[in-house]
Image 1 (cartoon, rainbow, N blue to C red):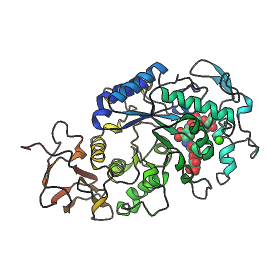
Image 2 (image 1 turned 120 degrees about the vertical axis):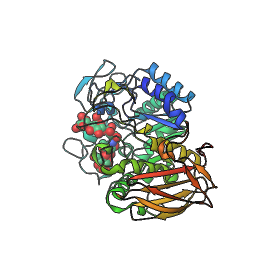
Image 3 (image 1 turned 45 degrees about the horizontal axis):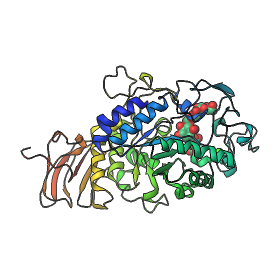
Image 4 (image 1 turned 30 degrees about the vertical axis):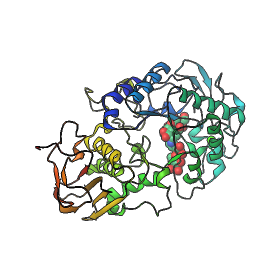
Length: 437
Ligand code: ARE
Ligand code: CA
C-alpha cells in the first residue's frame, strides 16, 4: 500500500484486505525522514522514531493490531543501507541533522567514505565494493560492517517487531553485503517473513542468490520478462521459470510492478491493452514465486509526484484525476487472491495455448485460468482436471455476493468459452456458483 497512511491502511484491512484473503500488507517506511511531499523523502531516514508522513508510532501500532485481527500481517519497509542525501535539514520529527550527523542515532564515524569515486557516489555497478561501500544516489552510506551500526539497526528492527510487525522488506539490500545482513538479523532473532531488494543487473557481480540465506529475494528478471512477454514476446513463453537460472520459486518474491519500476521500466497502470491487469492475473495464477506482491499505488504524471489526499488512502470518494488506484480492489486481482489461496502450491496441469498470446492452465484439480492477451476473441474448448460443476468466474471479483457474470459449467472436465479480447477467466473449487444461477 505505497504511501497509504497508517489510519487508512487500518481501515482498508478491515474493509477489504482481510475479507479478500490478502495475507500481508506492505507499508512504506515508518521511520522519521527528511521533510517534503515527494514520495521518495521516505527513503531518506533521519532516525528510527516511528514518525513519518504516514503517521505516528501510536497510529502505526493501532494499524498493525487492527490488521492482524482482520487476518492481515504487516510488512514494514526497512531502509537500513543509508541515511539522507541532504547536506543538512529538518526531519519529520522536527530535529536537525547534517549529512553525516544524526544526533542520538549516528555520527561521522558510522559511515562509509568509499574513496573509490570522486564524490564517494556509486558510479560503476560492475564493481562490488563501489555498490556496497559508496553512496547510492548521494545517500550517506552506513558502515554496516561495524559493530555499532549493526547493533543500532538490530535495535530498530527489534523495535519494529515489538509493534507486532512480522515482515520486513530490506530496501537496497544489494548495497549491503549479505553477510552484514546475516549479522544484523542474528541480533534480531526470528523474523517470520523477509524480502530483500536485490535488483538483478546484467554483468553485475552481486547476485540475488547470495541473499537467499537471509530470506526471500525480489526477482526483477520476472518483472522484466512479464513486460516483454505481454507486450511482444508472447505469454506462451511463460509456462516454466525453473530452468532460467533465476531464484528458486520458494525464495522468489515476484511482482508485475513496484513503486520504482512503475515509474521507470515495467508494465504499469498506464500500459496499453489491459496488459498490466492481465499480467497481474497471471502472476497470481502461476505457481512461480512463492510470495507474489500486488502493488497498490496512485496516479502520477511526474516521477516525483507525492501521494494524493495528504497520504489518506481511499478507494472511493476521491475526486480529480490524481487519486489512488486501489489495484488491490480490482475485481480480477482480488478474485485471483482467492484463487491462489485455494490452489496453494499445486502443480500446473492441462497447459493449453491458442496463439502466442493466449494461454490456459490448471492448478492441480483446484483451479483453472485462461488469459487472452490478444485483440481477438478466443473461442475454444478447454480441458481441466476440475470436478464437474458450475463455477463463478472470479475474474469478476470475489464471489461473496454470488457470481458476477455468467457461471462456467464444467462437464467431463471440459468447458467451452468465448473469451473476449484482452480479458481472462478464472475458476476454482472455493468459488462454486450458487444454485439457481
Ligand atoms: C532522491 C533523488 C536523487 C537524489 C537523492 C539524494 O531522486 O536525485 O540524488 O534523492 O538526495 C528512492 C528514489 C530516488 C531517491 C531516493 C532517496 O527512487 O530517486 O533519490 O529514494 O530519496 C538502484 C538500487 C535500488 C534502488 C533503486 C532506485 O540498487 O536499491 O536504485 N531502489 C530502492 C527503493 C527506492 C529508493 C531507494 C532504494 C533508496 O525501492 O525507491 O530510491 O532508499 C540498475 C541496477 C539497480 C539500480 C537501478 C537504478 O538496474 O542494477 O541496482 O537500482 O539500475 O539505478
Ligand atoms: Ca552500503
